[in-house]
Image 1 (cartoon, rainbow, N blue to C red):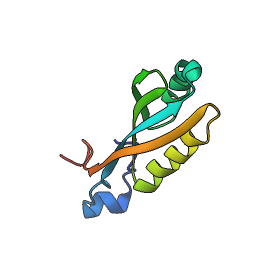
Image 2 (image 1 turned 180 degrees about the vertical axis):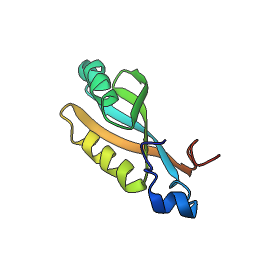
Image 3 (image 1 turned 30 degrees about the vertical axis):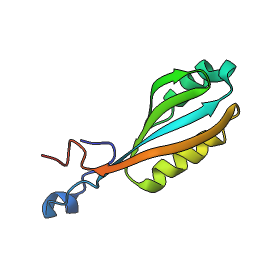
Length: 101
């Protein structure tokens, strides 16, 4: 069962589909000397996966049940000490693996 969608008695009986999955890519600009530390901290945030980092930039994805959740996570990241900017690059809304069956 997906953590993003709890199956309730009503959803089971009515056959309601899981809500669509939202995925966003983002580039986070940080002080270069703190990139490694911040990459590790970012990877600990639920729904965040760090993919690359070089110089002052960290590339990551954020996954969650809504655009609001993605935006909230990005705001949280931008408020972290050592972060200069956090910019959403792309957002995709689609079905997760559980709802595609």
